[in-house]
Image 1: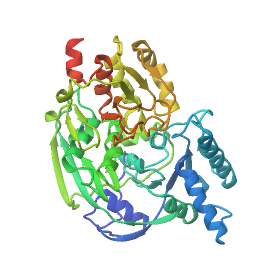
Image 2: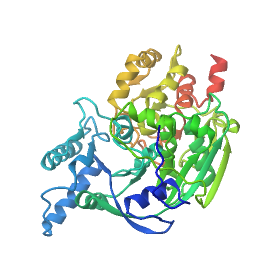
Image 3: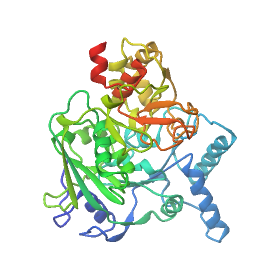
Length: 437
């Protein structure tokens, strides 16, 4: 059973409690500036070399860095430019590898050497981040791991460099927005539909430097992997962090991945939120974010005549094992009509998908299965879009040029909407695909 922590005064959200604990305070409030000890820090093959450059600049100015704060609390992912797309990306991997070896960092998930994958997937897939912890990473979607009941936030190169040398960093305690999702989830709705609806309502600046917290019986019913989709895309609303109180599902999920002890924290019943938003999940429909913003939403049936050139199921947002299972249910027994790429988010997920027969379903449908990588999501390599191409994608951003040419277009959707659209060759509500099959 999960145990409650009663070391604090009443009236705090889970985010406030975590920040209070990490800064050795009995109480914090929104707007307070605190110095927080850090539990875990992540770098990847894009942010890592930038951080290393900062550290080298400090050394040139006389700051001797013979060791980093705690190598056992640092982990590295190779994910954005793997397989290496050019000489620069290959060189970045070399720089990162040599730096990790120099400072004794053992948790280095290297491409081509067993388990590796997208950083925001490894954080939970490997049980690296635990409830109640303060976790920072050199990537804006570090928010993802807040679904486990941790304070998880992305930082820039200089802040990550400071954490590596001091083990702490300052935060302003964010205001908290509460999103209560109630009711019984229909089969055709996924977490991606929920978060796109929310972003459509509050806008991409609606949670600037705020906490987006999720609760309600519909959230309790969601799997951990679906909850991770919600917290991942709090970044697209400008949030400092996204978070969900841990529960028995959280404990079970982590116990399957780690033996490390943890002490979860919980929101007080009298905690204060600056705003509360309530949604009935039964009233939601499969939702699409049109170009060129995650807030530019509409329902899938409004776009049923939009023909597509590519369907993409991948990224930290849309290629977890449950995402692949849901897509396979739609694709099974069908052939895709457009270029379809499916990239599991981690090597371990890829292996599970093979064992469950999901990869065979995907390949029989005509889709291409690729290695875990962020390449196409960030428009770097492994399937970028050309001029005027239209893609429907499980990823999290769709600004101009995000997935390739600046004159391409990306529509964001859930894995089942993307799978249904791949079969029809145009944007499709999965309910309509099932009816016509």
